[in-house]
Length: 400
Image (cartoon, rainbow, N blue to C red):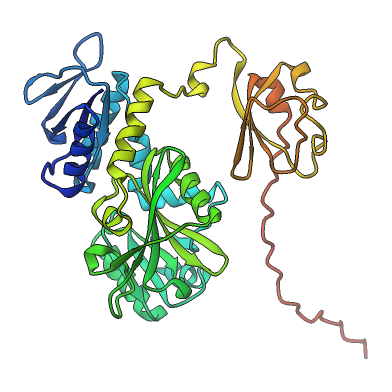
């Protein structure tokens, strides 16, 4: 395999480890400065120039895109995608993860546990927003902060309002987030590669510091994740469109609360804590994908007009609950079930004797109109009606 690592820091620990792991496995690897690319759109085929010369062919790239060059870096990754060069993290996945608001919006749509979060811009909306997340203390986060920078704990509502007003005055966008007291100064970083967690560590803050980032002086220790935490980490990375990701989670009283999904996770802390070859696991995954690439069925199976891929949810009140796939009538409607997702379990090419349960998710290929007819009508949100205070009804005076 010929691999390019896109990085502006060739001497950084993570870049060095990834390059060494690739070389040890017999792969050809180069570290290329992301900013030295030129995107060439002048020819019939998409192309790239590097340091003013045509780029040679690569089987795969591994983006290590820094926060300061997100726009240009993702444009380069997108061009590699147009050239059919494999990347474990797509440009869209990197963009989604880099914007904390966008990431929260995406994850909240998929029943991922997260700290209560709000986003407002008007000064008059700040106090109600603080109350909606549970009141002070609250955590205030800059949308594009990294390594704990731009994360502030405000102990009182008035202090939070003053901080937010100051940040807004400098054109900064911030999130207001519930403070998870039971996880103060601690969080979990899970390193996801493909569809599994290859390593996990607990980060513990130093002294009174509530941020547990290693760059803030925190310490690390290996941790064995429960299935609940592992599922949350893998699903979060997959939802964001990332095959290599660091997923940060708080340990809430009711289970994992995802804080952030990092598209360029550092390897030094987690390899030191766990003594595992995380870089090797990443390289092995990329090599396997180059040798036997996954196919995005949503793009490849739209063979003729009216056919495509869709996901059907088996609702608790649906007629399908309790029936087998053979009894469901899907095949008669020209719908083929590709995979059945039940919680953390995935059943590929399920047999007709499999009995359906509520909340099963079926990835199907077939007539789009037939599948659309099986989706229940979306419930409209009820408008909140504010009741007016009762006023005494005036009684006309009796005639004298």
